[in-house]
Structures are given as structure tokens and as C-alpha cells.
Image (tube, rainbow, N blue to C red; front, top):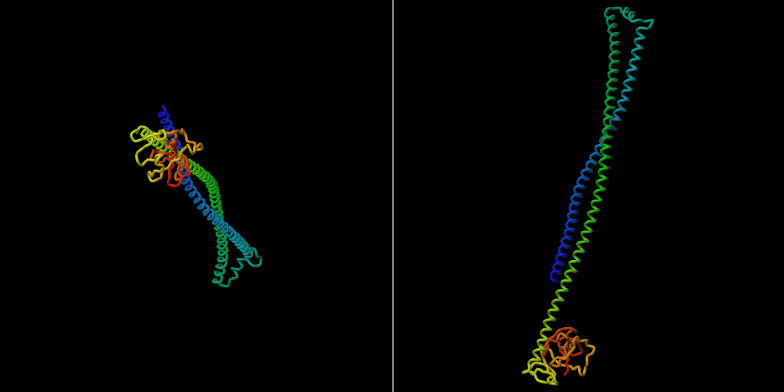
Length: 355
């Protein structure tokens, strides 16, 4: 049942992790989509800005042409005024000459002709009168034609100016439309960039949280692994200690009685009679609870084993050492021991006994 529950919990954690990563992937996709939108919007905005620049140049050209046309119209109107004045002046001079030739009481055209002394002079006077009249007519026609041409030119320039003003108005309206579009796109682009920045910050925050979660999860797993390894080590040591106790109590052929305890008689082990033993690179001695009761050692399951050593609930021989911290499991000639006390010389392990 416990195994099934653990399996369900692991499955739930795995599914939750998948959902979490799916959320991150969706947001990453959103960011990529927004970045594409931002890139497209920026390209479109650049195009609109280029159009605005081109229209600005066109408007400047139109204004320059309008200014030139206005100047030409003013100049043409001045020329038209001069032509009208010249035409009027020529007309007045013609009327004056006609009045002089036809209305002067003292001299008439007929008298001028009759007064000729020869036929040649008569013909010359006729030619002169005709030439004067022809000159006046031609000059008057010339001024009239000039005036009409200038008037036509003025009309053409006025019409051209109206067309240019209309074009400028259209360009201004198009410029206003494009400017409004550019402003709107700039706001959209800024908003999109803010959203991207917000999503990136959120993505970074979630990534940091996920990294922290993984770190904590790894630390928890490491702690559990260490705990399991320590438990296994303790279990193995306890089993060895119990086996050592069993071997010590059951080995009647190699033990003798000393103070009521089964003391090992083989060489290489610490005994009460021997007092000092060298084992596994350290010096072994013992101290008795009969001399030092050791009430402050706080040994769990404290008891006296069959060989007279003081042991804990796991079967470890209680020892003192200045080289190892308390709780360290060490090897002794009488079996595994655990450090519960200190105060002995370096290199020495002092076994706690009831000897």
C-alpha cells in the first residue's frame, strides 16, 4: 500500500512538472510570437516613416512651385498692366492723329493731296498717309495680341497655381493620415515591447524558481541518500556488533572466566589482565564504570555485555577517544565500538568496561 502511495505521489509530481513546463513553453511561444509582431510592426513603421519623409519632400517641392508660380503670376500681371497701358496709349495717339487729319479745319487730307506739285509728290503723300494708317493699325493689333497673350498666360498660371494648391492640400491630408498612423503604430510598438519585457521578466522569475526548486529537490534527495547510507552503515555495524557479542559469548573454548565475565583468551585482544593492547594502528586501554560511573555519557540502552564491556542498545562498545568525534564508529579488538567520551591521549582508544 505504501509502495502504491509513493508511486501515485511521484506520478502526481511528474504530471505537475509537465504542466509547469508546458506553461513556460506557452509563454515562450507567446514571446516569440510577440517578437515577430514587433519586428513586422517596426518594419511597417519604418515604411510609413519613409513615406512621411517622401511626402514631406513632395510638399516642400509643391510649396516651392507654388511660390514660383505666384511670382510668375505677379510678374505676368505687371506685364499685362503695361500692355494694357501701351494699348490704350497707342489707341489714344491714333485717335489724336485721326482727329488731326480728319477734323482739322485748316488742313484736310484732300488739300494735302491737291497741294502736291507733281504726280510723284502726290503719290508719295498718298503712300505716306497709307503708311501712317497701316502703322497705327499694326501697332494697335500688336498691342492687342500682346495683351491677349499675357491675359492667356495669366489664366494658365492661375489655373496651374490652383492645381498646385490642390496637390499641396492632398499631400497635407495624406501626411496627416500617415502621421496619425505612425503615431498609433509607435504606441502599439511601445506597448508590445512592454509586454515582451514583462513576459521575459516573468519567464526569468519562473526559471529562477524552477532552478531553486531543482536545487532544493536535489538537496533533499542527497540528504535522503545520505540518511539511507548512514542507516545502512549503522545497521551493518549493529549486526557486526551483535555477531561479535554472540561469538564472544559462545566461544567457550577460547574464553576464560574473569570477574564473572567471559574474557577472550586469544592473543591480540584487550583483557583486564593484559591492560594494554595494540590493535588496528591504535593503542587500546580500558576504564571501569566501577571507578567512573559515567552517568553523563547518555548511552542509549546502556548495558554490560557478557565480556564485561559497556555497550549501547545497538551493541556498540562504548569507547573514549580524542581523535574521533562523538558518535563515530571505530574498530576495536573486542568488536565495533562507538565514541561516547573523550579525554584520553591521542592515538588511544579507551574501552568502557565493568572490569
